[in-house]
Length: 255
Image 1 (cartoon, helix red, strand yellow):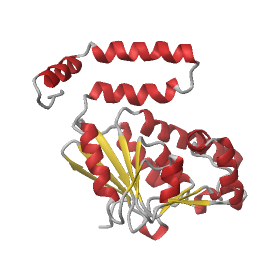
Image 2 (image 1 turned 45 degrees about the vertical axis):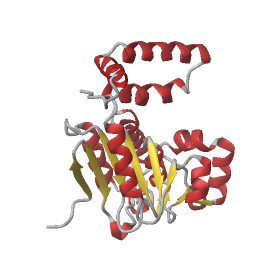
Image 3 (image 1 turned 180 degrees about the horizontal axis):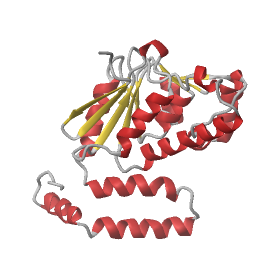
Image 4 (image 1 turned 90 degrees about the vertical axis):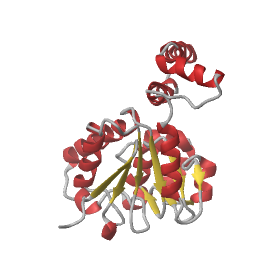
């Protein structure tokens, strides 16, 4: 039997998804994208947080270009829209997702990472959008997600020049939230995922759904949406438990 293209390991309330195409530096093909999508379409009911990582020294080296060249313009557009659906499911599916990154975080790999909520990088991690050097354009959501992290000006320069950012630079720019030692990203990501999984599920869900959307709103609409989110969470059973736990100086027992 061959190893699955996406390894899924569940420990307690945390699922770890390992992209497993070591001979391709975990480049994204349709089969791998479908496997990731399949998990987020129907995650196991006890899973409350997810870690995504790669294997053999690399997170994900982007779109498998051997598949890209086989598509016409319409096929490429539809494929891009399919990526958008999967990345939206990762970002807005309701489960907090942590990336454990090392080696190549390139093109579609960076698009995947930017759809996750917390990103951990080892010193070997490097970030690149080389599409401009290959005569193509991003298609998996980078113009929105990476663009909002870096700003349009810096992303334009990154794509025009094919520039690479290392882990330290990536953290300063917001491409990573944490940097750790070599070989430590997965353990740190799993630690963070377990911590996040212990939060109240409703507040996790609201944070995932609301904050990115509030960033798109006017000030007035954003403030009103914030009030709605506060009303939903602060009147929930979990909020009552959180307050009781604080007053009783114990850890909360969320549902």
